[in-house]
Image 1 (tube, rainbow, N blue to C red):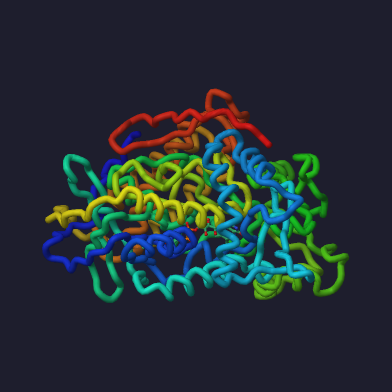
Image 2: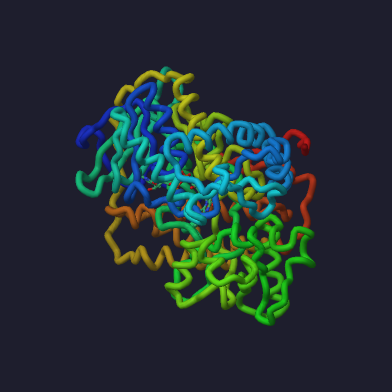
Length: 555
Ligand SMILES: Cc1cc2nc3c(=O)[nH]c(=O)nc-3n(C[C@H](O)[C@H](O)[C@H](O)COP(=O)(O)OP(=O)(O)OC[C@H]3O[C@@H](n4cnc5c(N)ncnc54)[C@H](O)[C@@H]3O)c2cc1C
């Protein structure tokens, strides 16, 4: 891959011998579903430290609305969930990874309920199951209507707090993975961290788990919290690990489109309950696009909206929820209390008026390449959750499969760490010398805003070779001074990570000359069977490795 002009090994200069050092068995970077599930399991075999760069509960996990997809009903089957996942993945799922996800999912969800997660229930006490786009059965477990993530995060945090061998450091930013030589093998040995109270420290660990969530913040329009800045991919890349599938970013079709408001997600579950997508004239347009209409897979709905708006010259679409619950007053508020409150904050009432919506970046499908147990290409470094690319989602994630992925693969990483039983890393005297440049007046907020707008315009729902080449030039230019600078606080380090990840994403999107799943190229609008490969990129190599996939069998 054409490298960015400046890509240092570490973000800042440091000398380990001058820094406080902490030792643990497992270091988990991230306190979302994947990190916490991993920490709980890893705590049975040793000490664990969990880092969160803000508060423990500021995560996509805590914001998740719709639910967790899993097979709990007798009308449903593992084969059907598997088949829906493969279909959504548009030919790029690793069938073995999908099989692991759906087979191990039900036990994980039962485990969460046993650990105290509240879930919504039917009058007979059975778990209430909803339906979302791309699912052919009701299998979405939800809590408090539309606050599933908060219920899951609360249960996991409570569980972790009760385990003496897990320490949680919040407001502690991981800057870089440190490596050492272990009998001729390069391995991950520690992480350079910055704590808002204690400053720089090094945490040495036998196993390091990247569970930092996604990279939605590379886009101006995103449903993601501010912590989603792609730090795992950037750290892993600087440490020499392989990354994959970065051309695939899922755009959620329906985020609230109100000037000045953050792009709040209007959950798929709203369309699952029967809401319609309409244009300014009140006409439904998804039925002519796909037989599943508004409940088609997300990539198809996002594309359907963008194409319809371009054809009709309109700026946004609308969700029509007025008929839900037979049009009974209060029906929307009863089923979606959180959304109803959020909309009321903008003076909107879904039971009486149309809700303005547009697509926004939502889920980072690509990430640090792992095997089915979360092992990356760098010994001692593991990844799970949205930071990882394990082949489960293919070219398009099936709705509500990601919380499930965090649970299943978080636990699997802990088992891999126990099985690998790596020795303690010998703490190394490591230092990073960087000539500190003249401190100019770099406006980090302006770099971030310019990058995010450029990514939205050129690497958004619709891409083309010309636009991708243009944005790569822009990122390379910003990288010349943005990556040369040395910052002292997380906002600057995040900006540097965003530059690195954006470059990787745009480069991968340029490489894949076809349209598949979430990756839509106007200059190559059809899927091409020659591209039924995953693209894996390793630092120092100009070209990606094409990872071939076995045939899929749909149940
Ligand atoms: C609005 C919204 C709604 C969603 N709804 C659903 C849904 O209904 N069902 C579903 O399955 N999925 C849903 N998703 C997706 C799902 O929530 C995420 O994919 C999943 O929660 C990711 O979990 P995670 O553990 O990988 O990361 P996260 O939950 O994002 O946690 C990331 C953690 O990493 C930490 N971190 C990041 N970088 C650093 C660093 N450098 N140093 C230290 N700590 C760091 C953060 O502080 C945070 O603790 C939704 C996402 C959003 C944004």
